[in-house]
Length: 118
Image (tube, rainbow, N blue to C red; front, side, top):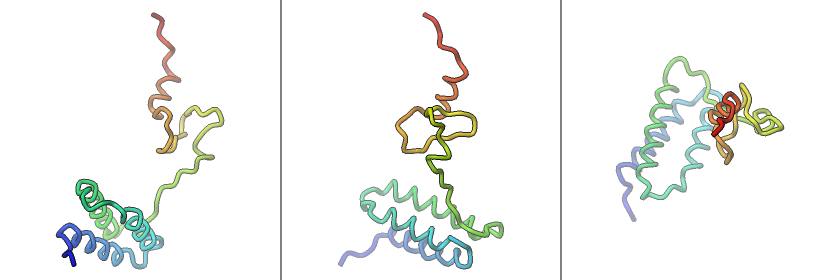
């Protein structure tokens, strides 16, 4: 049997700490479990990604432990509410991360600047 690495032990410890800190806060435990399940299939060799997620989890743990946190939620953007029918980005509208279209900043720039003549 392979012994767990130091990083694996740290990740498991973080998981337990997040679950403890999330007790009594609506949505926290379910969110922690879902986040860890989502990234459970990362290969052990992807150390940079694992370390990044570990640091992100540590910051979330600090926020959860602070007295100001009453719940743990997630920002969810629904496609129907964020995109105009024409597909253009207007003030207050955001495109989803998965879109292969231009970024919202580029789209807004193109709306403001007229095309240049050659």
